[in-house]
Each structure stands twice: as structure tokens, then as C-alpha cells.
Amino acid sequence: DEFFKNIFGTIRKELQTIITISYIISIGIGMLFNAKKYSEFGINIFDYADVFFYLIAPFADIKILFFTLISLIIPYLIYFSNDVVKRKYPQFYSKANLGLEKRGWYVVLNNLAFGGMIIFYLFTAANLYGKISKKNIITQVNTTIKYLDNETEIGKLIGKNNDVIFLYQEENVIAIQIGS
Image 1 (tube, rainbow, N blue to C red):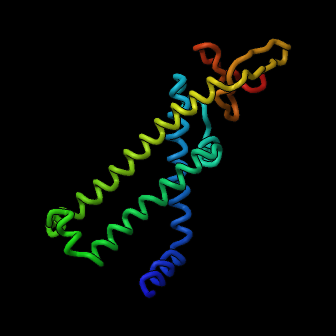
Image 2 (cartoon, rainbow, N blue to C red; image 1 turned 180 degrees about the horizontal axis):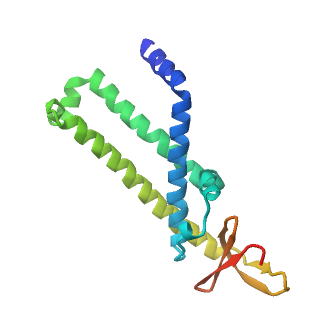
Image 3 (cartoon, one colour; image 1 turned 90 degrees about the vertical axis):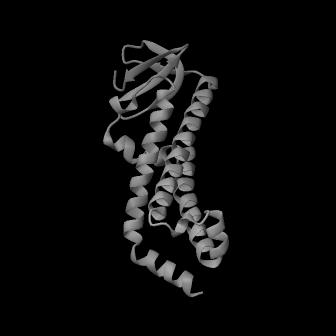
């Protein structure tokens, strides 16, 4: 089919740009999901994390990777299917949109609604991820951290980055500097 040849030809020509934009979006999604996870414990992860933490954020947790892939694929499929319905079934499309697609402002409004839907989905999914992560962390077994002076801390491991380990201890969160 000529239509699919054109799509794949365009994708092949723009593959580097598509990969770069997808990675940047993935980093943003990873940052959002990590921020929600840590904020469930009252931690502002942006105060503790460095750039490298965010560069690997989308790949650090399989759930974040899953939501990232879904967040990149589903909007494209919805947008693509909307275009297919518009071309193949113009009368149905016009009735479904109450004839508004004939207005000059419809394209802008449609794109804004589509973008708003994606943002709403991401924030809803990130909130859900944060709540599920907190539940999983609270129910996990305790972790023991031993300092250089043989003192120990016991708690539930929330997470860590290059500089800090976060432990949850009976409604309290402690941040332990790595190397202390």
C-alpha cells in the first residue's frame, strides 16, 4: 500500500530526530514519575538528584519504561486513527465532531485537546505509580545500612541516587549520604 510506504519512508528519513525527541520525552516522563514516587514520602528528589539520575530515569524501573513506551505509542495511534477516520469516513467524522472540523479554529482546538489528554494521562499515571510504589516500599522487608563507624540504620529502601540513599523508618524518612 502506497500510504504505508510513505509513512515508513518518512520515518526512515527522520529516524535520528524521532529517536532524539523520543529520548527527551522519555527523560521528562521518567523525571515526572520519579518526582511522584519520592513526593509520596515528602522528598523533593530535584534537591538530591544530578543530571545522570534523570538521563537513566526512564530505564531505571520497568514500570516507568512501560509507561514511557505506552505514552509514546498510544498518542501516535490515536492521532493516526483520527486521521484515518477523517479520510476514509468523512461523513461519520463530520457527524462525530458536530461539523466543527469545518471551522478554522478546529485544528488548533483539536491539537490542544489532544495535548491536554496526553498531559492528563501522564499525571494520572505518575500519581498512580507513586501510590503503588509507596505501597510496595512500605510492605517490603527492611534494609540495613552500615556506616563506616559500624553504626547501622534499618528501614525500607525508598531509592538511591549517586549521592544519597533514602530509607523509610516508621513514618520518617532519612537521607543517608553515600560514603558516610
